[in-house]
Length: 558
Image 1 (tube, rainbow, N blue to C red):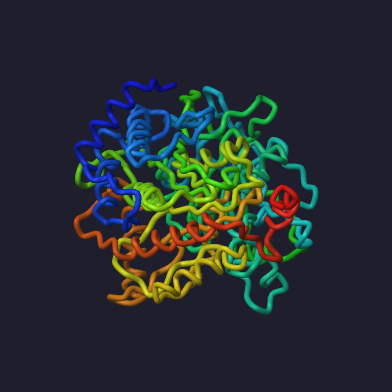
Image 2 (image 1 turned 90 degrees about the vertical axis):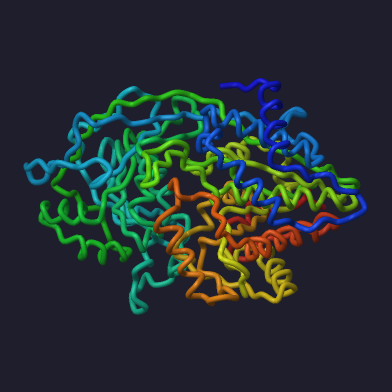
């Protein structure tokens, strides 16, 4: 679905005139980041006319037009491919229908499954039917192959045509201090090996026909409602036929369902969890099979990343990228108030509003030495796809990208005494964060490293290419709020993640207090600003898995 320029411009102009009247600013006066401007942006992006901003829909068409119009009004230059505002991102879009077959067979007895309650699956194969026909199930523990940590859960067991069943998180997540595995994977701080994306990738590399992860709220970092929120829909970057995943189905089974499955197979899941925390663990055949037959609606859609920029004066080939994602979850079942659009006011219209305000502030200053890029990514909610496509097809060379500063979900409960750090020990940008937070009278704190949030936002795509990154995400831990302390911060997280995360009630509210969000946006501006008029480069710290990648291009930054 390619979009023509005229309709997009007409829509964006209409929206701008109706909700954002005050963007003109004299060039000699640095503006302040404005809660009013942020509110206008969020309220606009969550209007029903944007239909929840799902990629590949009419809602995307309107969103892209709005973003281009806003970037133009901010005085940005087109920052996309060949002087355009965008980068085309071809996506495979799939949606499972009602299953014709869905069951385990355990020790010869059929165990019917309730789709969405007992099991949640989707597909990334470009086929009209997703079929698993009585495939043998194999428990692979945490499913980790990490030679650098002397760990291999698979022990050369053949998974071709089989169903791999995984535990979520890392092998040391639930380990006691006296267990040999304790801290081998960073303790409670999740590594990429703990992410569901890694587990599906590993299952595909080994030729499995399906992959199922046993859900645990604490280990996953979110409840079952988040797992099943895509409603059978999935997106992936379009791949050549020889690179398509081997997995006909990938997804989750509930903890309760897993308990019944293992008990029916004569196995104790608790004992196997303990065994999976040892280097000696070997995959266990479950004496069970999985059968599923889903009709699939599948299409290739052209989605888009959107870019604006402020060209650098003396070092224009060196870029600082601010990023947030424009997509949300589109249309879904009506909630209790009859709302059908899951428009992501906080996740991540608020992030888009933040990077727009950062752009507005940069435009009010003298021209920076380095180029400032404002990136609005597509398909973050579908697996960081827009940023991943960019990272594989960069517009600005990654070796000359100074940093990627990402905003994805900010708390709306007021000023905080601290700023939440994501990815402690990774890079020197965390030291810059601490320095500028201190100027606000705040301290940095890492609260929930076990949730692996460092690997769950768009900055991670660029980190894999060696670009130094920093994520501002309030879901990463309870803020110590000026009013109510950490208890109030935890209440905000619990209310948001328990009720509105990826749901229709993630909507703008007059009860929002953006004072804390303003603190965080200002810190992110200050960090980028400190490099914008500089020749300094942030670095990865010793021990980071990304340091070697960055160091390999060091000559380009001499």
